[in-house]
Image (cartoon, rainbow, N blue to C red; front, top):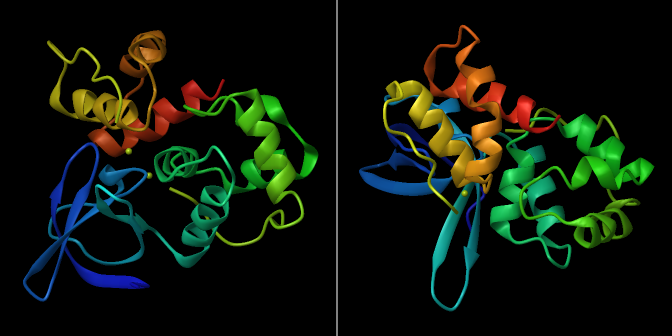
Length: 199
């Protein structure tokens, strides 16, 4: 129904952002909301997913990311939330190479993707996804991490990672390494966290 929205970002939260278009605020679930800033004018590609109990708008940095989301959600066992978590890793070339090479291990590092689902992704998408095609990818909730005593940017970054489906145990494993880096803003914490979680 919608292809993209042009507007101004008015709210940025760990799990979503709000884009105001002609006086209407659209709540968009994106891979990494902190890649956007309040009062930023931007164009966001969207996909509307309608289910019995909800209607959700998912947002993407460009058409290529949106197309990859559509391909991922066409795979049995991959819902919109899992697809968004995969896209949040911001590594389209790595993803397409993993699919092309049948790299199950790479795919199972994403939350909600087990060995069976990874094999299904490879089976369904191997012939559909071209390596090094399109542009960069970006950024869904389960447990909330323990954020007491953390600075606001660090806490927001961890909350965004938790929203993508990473467990408290996984986040505890990377907290000290994240703190040791000279990072500024939740966006940098999310990006650095995703890199650490993929190893």
